[in-house]
Structures are given as C-alpha cells and as structure tokens.
Amino acid sequence: MTQPLLSVDELTVTFTGRGRRDVQAVSGVSFSVDQGQVVGLVGESGCGKSVTSLALMGLLPDRGVRVGGRAEYDGTDLFGLSPSRRRALRGSQLAMIFQDPLSSLNPVVPIGVQVTEILARHRGMKGEAARKEAASLLDRVGIPDPRRRLKEYPHQLSGGMRQRALIAMAVACAPRLLIADEPTTALDVTIQAQILELLKELVDQEGTALLMITHDLGVVAGLCDEVNVLYAGKVVESAGRRDLFAAPTHPYTHGLLNSIPRLDAPRGEPLHPIRGSINDNIAWADGCAFAPRCDFYTLECLAGTPGLSEPRAAGHQVRCVNPVLPGSAGATGGTTGGTAGLEKTEATS
Image: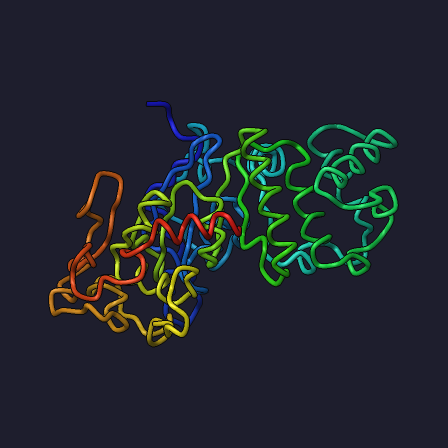
C-alpha cells in the first residue's frame, strides 16, 4: 500500500498557564489522508477539531501550548521542521480555509493585494502577471467581475464572496493538502452548496487531499469518504461514510444522527437530542468522557480509557465498551433506513 499524504499519530495539544490547571484539548488523535481523498473530522464545538488543524498547520502560539505526537506530511515530520521550512510549506503545499472570513482577511488591505502577496511569496509572480492570475483565481471560485473585486476591501464583499476569496487564496499555489475548517458556517444553504461543489471539484480535478472539519452531518454525507468522530479530544468512531450513516456504533455518533431531521422520517416524529453539554464529561483517564451524557452507560464505562476496537467490520473502529450494535435496544435512526437517508442527503447537498 502507498504511504498516505498526511499521517497523524497520537496527536496531543495541551494548553498551559501559570497558576491554572492544564487543559488537554486534543488527546491522542490519529488519522490519515490519502491523495485525492476527503476525510472528515466531526463533532460538537469544543471537541478539538479546529485545534487539531491549527496544530498541523503550525499556527498555535509558541508559548502556553504543548504539542505532542507525530504528524507526517509526505514522509516528513511536520513538528520537526524549522519555522522557516514550515512557513515555506504553508500556502505552497499545505493550505487552510479558515472558519470566519471576515476576521481572517485583513480589513484594511484590498482583496487583490492579499491574493497577490501569496503569488509573490510562493510563485515569484509580480506586477500585472500577479494581478492577472489573482483575477483568474477569483473567477475560478465564482466571484463575478473579478478585476473590480481585486480593488475592493473585505467589508465590501458579501459573506459568500469573502469565503470564496479565502478559497482562492488557499488554492492559489495548487496545494496538495487543503484543510477546510467549517467553510460553510453562517452562509445560506445556496452558497453552502456552491462552496461544497467547488471543494469537490478541487478534489476531483486537481487530486487535492481535503481534510474537512465540520459539525454539519449533511456536509459529511455529500463530501467525505472517511469520517472521524471526535469527542473531548479523542476519536470515538472512525468509519467510511456509508458505513457510519448506515450503522453508527458509538452512542455519541448515534446521538448526533438522531439530533438532526431525517428526510425519510414520518411527519411529526420528534428529534432525540443528546442530553447535557460538552462540559458534562469526565477525564479520559477515569473512563469514557461521554459517560455522563450516554443513554447506554454502564459501570464498565468507568474502568479506564476505552480503546478503539472493530466490533462490526474491518475499518469501522469505535471507542466504546457498550457499543450500539444493529438490532440492539435503542438502535434507531442510523441503523434503520440509514443508507436511504444518506442517498437523499447526498442528492440535496
């Protein structure tokens, strides 16, 4: 088998501070992304998705943060690179689409300058050649009248246009790995669909590897090949997209799927949200962090950190001592009609 483009092994991120308790935001996350593959990181806000991406890009602060584990990009240890070598990779081979374009773009610099400085830094383009390429990039991501938009400031663009401008900057150097951190947040469904279609085209046409970070399971259904579900800084379930939707095994994944409306559900059927909040957890060292919110909780859940196992099939891993298997009590939602619901979701994504 060929080596994955990105391989993350036991990644940990701990925030420290003088006079206060250390907080481990990411606790032993492992996954891989192949060339031309879309891998999803899914979970509620606060589960460690964005911190994982910032650690991989080397964008976490130098002070007050400890990063452990290993992350290899094309066989190179990212955490072992010098700052200058890391900066050379960012933008040229590794790129990231940030969650909030209004705060990610410089408000006092025209869009054209922000795009052309990437072209100058990584591709050596200047002057009219850089402006022409920048206009071409804006046109490629669907921004109308790109020459005029180059002279405008971020506040003069709509939310969808700002997000497209960020995508144009991210793909300016044809990166081999693209990290998209909630790229459709706060956008209307029409613009969301257009941006997702644009990302799909990049993967299909350019062979770009895409790491999609989202809490939207509709995005996962329409775009991702493999899915990693995170909770409290750990991967609790990892599976192929269809397998995950057809037969979710971890109670948390089950709860996420039951918390959203289903296209194939009877009219008037109530949703079944996960009780509590992300703050209602215990330390992984003491047991399963999801236990206080879990409907399938047993005393065995407090017998130390559960490991990843394959209770159903090869490639479908779950971190749970009492998984929700097909046919078991409470196995609803994803286990019945899940594939049909996925196909309908794909059609509307």
